[in-house]
Length: 235
Image (tube, rainbow, N blue to C red; front, side, top):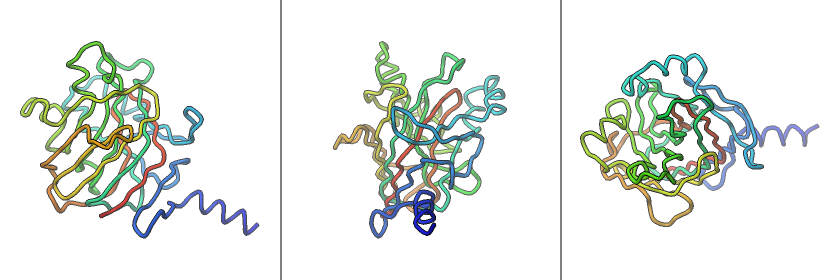
C-alpha cells in the first residue's frame, strides 16, 4: 500500500529535475486551473498528455465575435503553483483546427507566461500549425507569434509593426512539436524542433524586465490543442 501511494503522489506532483527546474508531465488535468477551456487526459501518437479546447459555450459565442473580441476570451489552463519571471520554459505541444472550425482557424497553440491573477495579463508565444506548409508564402511567414495581452494582441502588433513579432517555421498540424521559450528580463526567444537557433526573437517583451507570474498552456478558438511534458526552469 505504501508503494502504491508513493507512485500516485509522484504522478500528481511536479517532478524536480534540479534545484530549480520543475517538470509537469500533464498526464492528467490535476494541478490545472481552467479558464474558458475544457481539458481531459488523452493520448496522441502514443504519448500521454492533456487535450484542451475552448469550452463549448465560449466557442459558440466566439463564432459571432470580431478578432478584437475573440482576443479577449483568454483560453488558459494555468499550471498551479508556477511563478516565472525569467528563465526557460520547455514543452511539447500540438494543435489542429477543430471539426467545423471556421476558415480562419489555424490550430493556434502555445504557452503563456507571466500570467497575472486577472487571467487577462500575460505574454505568450504560440504557433499556427496549418501555416507551416501552406502554399501561400504570406501565411507561412505567420507560422509563429508573440503576443502580450491585453494591450498587444496579434492584430495590433501586425498592424503597427508588420513581421516583427511573427516568423516562419516548418510545422505540421496535430503533431507533437517541441518548443522552448527563453526569457531574460525584457528579451525572449522562441526555439522550435530542438533547433539551436531561435525562430522568433523579441527584444522588447511588453510586460517589462521585472514582471513575473504563472505559466499556462494556451490555445485559440476553433482549436484542438495537446500539451505534455512542460519544464519550467526559473533563472
